Length: 306
Image 1 (spheres, rainbow, N blue to C red):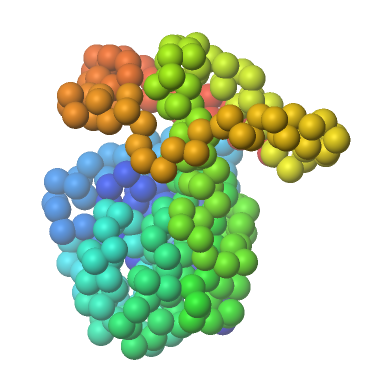
Image 2 (spheres, rainbow, N blue to C red; image 1 turned 90 degrees about the vertical axis):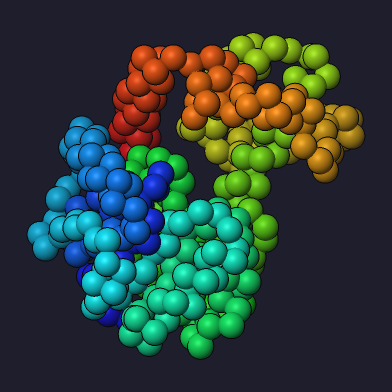
């Protein structure tokens, strides 16, 4: 499969603008589609912010790339070689979109899903060419986390997987290819395991939210950014790990439901930043301040780890 040069992103919400700018700076012709004119306008503003962040990271701008914004789906798909969907995380909605675009793209165009956990095999069911469907999971924020999970489904053609791996490398990211499908893939399985234990400690009254965040940020978060889990096992020693795990694992949370603390907050309408309150309270000014602080910190950490 030849080098991919034309891409379409379906959905201009949280992920679309960042994905689009990253691909365009890597020399691709990218069209970002959304049915909502207001969403497209917001996406253009977000794309400008992303450009500034990538400038601070000194991400190169390769010749030939461009990002345009489209409200006509047929126009956005014309000549595309890879369609990356970034629409809401709903199996039936994604299937509906995939079925609709099959007649609007070439038989060789790749359909890549940015799903964070829906099995790719299920997404490809009922399509004429399930072999061209692949998972391509970007981590949020997509312009700052230089890693993509590549997830082949049961019928995904090997050359499709390789093409997405190659494209991931072209944009300066690390492709992490799963050897088999599992719910949530790898990143979210590890993240949700951490979240489950953190919320269990809150549910049990072991610690408060502020203390827990400080402990995780400086106790393991800071360390894991430099020494990831499997390397950490080698560094600590497998004799130490197996000794501690032999008594600690039995007391770790194995909750199969959802945290009572998180559920209670959700039921009160305390949804987090989007609602101005969650575990913590947020003013519009505080939200803007956090966005700037976190973007700056992620830029600094990425530079340090590069």
